[in-house]
Amino acid sequence: MKALNSSGFPVLRFNFRGTGLSEGEHANGIGEVEDVRAALDWLEGEFRLPIIFAGFSFGAAVGLRAAYADERVRALIALGLPAVPVENRVYDFEFLRACTKPKLFVSGARDSFGPPGNLEALVNTFADPKKLVRIEAGDHFFEGRLREMRETLEEWIREIAPPR
Image (cartoon, rainbow, N blue to C red; front, top):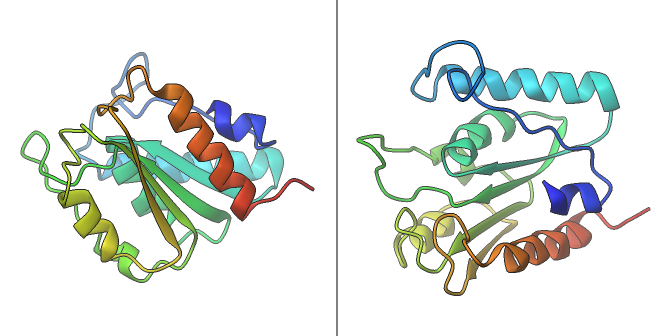
């Protein structure tokens, strides 16, 4: 959020249905895709600017599915993308094999949901342009490594969307 905001992008953070104080019930990633689409619609209505989608873990997995084909979305960022089954949920990212939008994947080097080899193999199947960055000593939540994660995002954002 801070990396995008400091780069001049308005940011919308929200909870998926059934999380925190949000209404509704968890919908196993299907209804949550609609949550992301509703958020993209709101951003378009409020700002009418190109959108960079960014999501973390489950939010990245679900959000990528909603954002990859949306013409309003200029680029995609996935933090802590699950590359192994999580809670009996297997994620399918086949749609990214043909997605030619710029994509950034950031994961901690010690992320148990994106273990060494698994995430690299997965990202290698995706269409270019793409970039995978591992944050040394970082875990799934980038604990103690948020500064490095933020700097990685800010640098990449400058590359794909230079300031005007």
